Image (cartoon, rainbow, N blue to C red; front, side, top):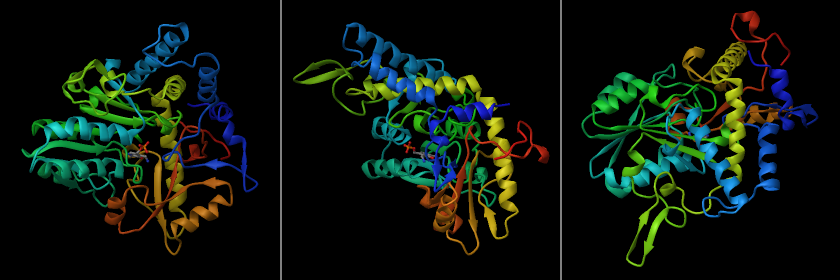
Amino acid sequence: MLDVGRIKQDFPILGQQVHSRRLVYLDNAATTQKPRQVIDALVRYYETTNANIHRGIHTLAVQATDQYEDVRTKAAAHIGASNPQDIVFTRNTTESINLVARAWGDTNLGEGDEIVLSLMEHHSNIVPWQLLARRTGAVLRFIDFRDDGTLDLDQARGLIGERTKLVSIVHMSNVLGTINPVAELAEMAHAAGALLLVDGAQSAPHLPVDVTQLGCDFFGFSLHKMLGPTGVGVLWAKPGLLEEMEPFLGGGEMIAIVKPEGSTWADVPHKFEAGTPNIADVIASGAAFDYLRELGMDSVREHEKAITAYAMDSLQRIPGVSIHGPLDVEQRGGAVSFSMDCAHPHDISTIVDGHGVAIRAGHHCAQLLMRRLGVPATSRGSFAIQRRCRCAHRGVAACEEDVC
Ligand code: PMP
């Protein structure tokens, strides 16, 4: 069980008041707050280590390089990857997906090839493929979801076929909370000779993830959604894939030899990290990985299941409120979207903000999903480790009797 009282003390921002009320931050799916350990790591880097990496041989340059590369190892460990060299640092999940669309997609897709997505994707897992389709003549197909918010696997089986080159799917929906059966989709994709990319923006922060067990070929996520700083993303690729891919961006750091007639590339993953990277934020991300590892991702998941159950139970007691997405916490994570009769999501968000409560209202960068639900927007509360709940008396494990 998590010691939420101690965890809360690690988050300086949660001590403040909004509209004279104690801040209750329930917008973790957009970005999480940062514990003191991450903030301190950032300051410490600038105060003690700041130097450019991989080039210099002076002491600070070596220290900065070691610290940066150490985080690559932590990123690999967080998702069960065996080799840190299969980890590329990007700016965010969006850039991780764009990297694959460019560096893998441009050479592997052609006229009439198919990319299978779902209707619950975030725009960052739709638009890069639309751009790729425009460049190559490839075609996008979309798997629907059932009314209970779970992916329609029967339809997926029909859509994934010999024309499919890539299946790209969100692991945990930022709107419905649905956790998709990635391993099953990987089997379907591989049986068709296609690869599987997983958008792990909402799963890497909240679930134990093992890319080998998932069977995926690419996995992307963002540090700012998992206690880390903004400006750091991760792309993992199955061993061997990065070597086969063309560079994404060209410039310093990613080359081996440059001649007037052309250049050769650095070994992976440096081939994909052109220019000076976001050294400080990557190094501070190490503290975020450490923080979650010390809590244990199994405990994080159990805790968030309890909060989610409590939130859904409470919401369902309010007349006129309907929850979008699975009601079974085993099938979902802690992003809980809802609609309320006669109240616009923006009004709900404004009203609760007046009580110090931060929730999100809007289309959540998922307009295909909104259209499928038949609503222009939803309200969404999204939970993380620093919330308590009062659901123990309702029989949910791993929860504390406490006052929210
Ligand atoms: N995918 C999902 C499921 C997300 O929730 C988000 C962020 N809301 C993204 C992708 C994009 O993440 P980022 O903005 O960090 O690139």
